[in-house]
Image 1 (cartoon, rainbow, N blue to C red):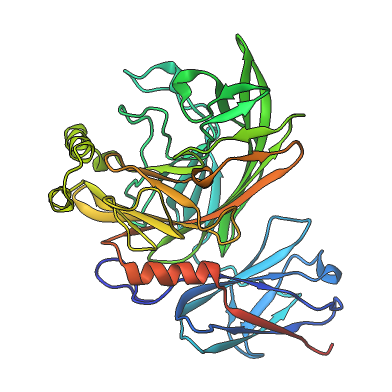
Image 2 (image 1 turned 90 degrees about the vertical axis):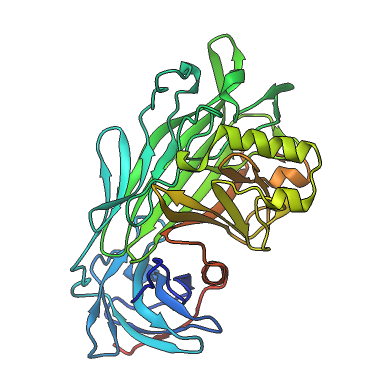
Length: 436
């Protein structure tokens, strides 16, 4: 596949195609027909459920037609519902159909660059072709010099990298030291009749900590890890009660030109009372941007202009070090407190343009969720509580899915929309069993 000089393609990117397979005997294979539908696609990811009769098969052969070249494929880590994935390399035009023969035998074609998950004792690092894509901090990251120890943290992603290795996230920013790369806390909550804030660490009413590495894997198609974290509420001096057990599954795909990462979160209320989440303008899945995108003097000027109810023309003359673009065409000037299917944060890092796009899955609670786009600071979050209160009841799960895409080069609104369509509207897939 080819990318233009800004590091972007003029085509859409991969989406996940879920295949519902028929029951097959262990001796048979099947034909898979993948249709692009109405969207152009590049490096399209295909994921199929492995039939129950073949659940113990470890090696698979995927090829275009019966005598075509073998395509690298990878079995998923989830043994409860095993899956197989491969990537249609290059362009798949709108309306095009690709035919594959999948056989439960032989080689998986896993030659070439591999996706890896490396545990160095403190971090889980996802790598594609030996270059880091992201780092999850399972050990406690101590506060840097000059920042109080109450802000120490584990269980968050930082750094998140562009394909060229530039960091698009920040950690322990002096202006808001409680913001940590990619993180997921609630803000204005009530637990056992008392206010609890999982976001603002300074208040000391709650904490979020890494708990366990459940599993990790790598291969020809993706690298993945699954971890758990505990959200606890302070109930007495030096005493905390676990409230939520959160499970993150994070997966980076072996594609070129972009870094593509899926994050799936499942928050289970492990207490015996509801966690009440009040209406508020921020909280939820959040990302703090690069330190290169923040200037205290510029933020002060922006705040003064906005509080003074400056005209749109006056505000339009302000040039932040970073900007936002949402699926609805909103920016830092008018995007705050609006619903969005995706948000891109972009600007120069090290003197060169780069960005990170976050896509909220259409199945998420209250999708498309309202977003908090801070006008002066480089951070945003998907805030479902912005439109009203809700609760996470005992034993119940709050589930959500997001896709992160990082890139080098300037923002490309047309491409972003195609990326969204790939994520939200996967290709059509048909499966036909082959005769043994």
